Image (tube, rainbow, N blue to C red):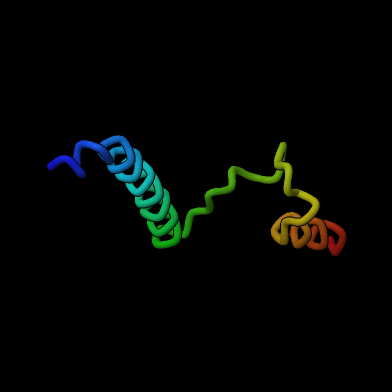
Length: 64
């Protein structure tokens, strides 16, 4: 019991971090199953220069 009380703060923080990671994994899996992207679109995105969706969109626009 003494070990548990000495490490209680570490145990609580570990549980919180694990719950947060589990929530993120759940959201990613749910988005994958429903074919939704975690991305909100290209406008205002910091990764627009490296994003393949933005690149393909640009190429499609040029072809038309």
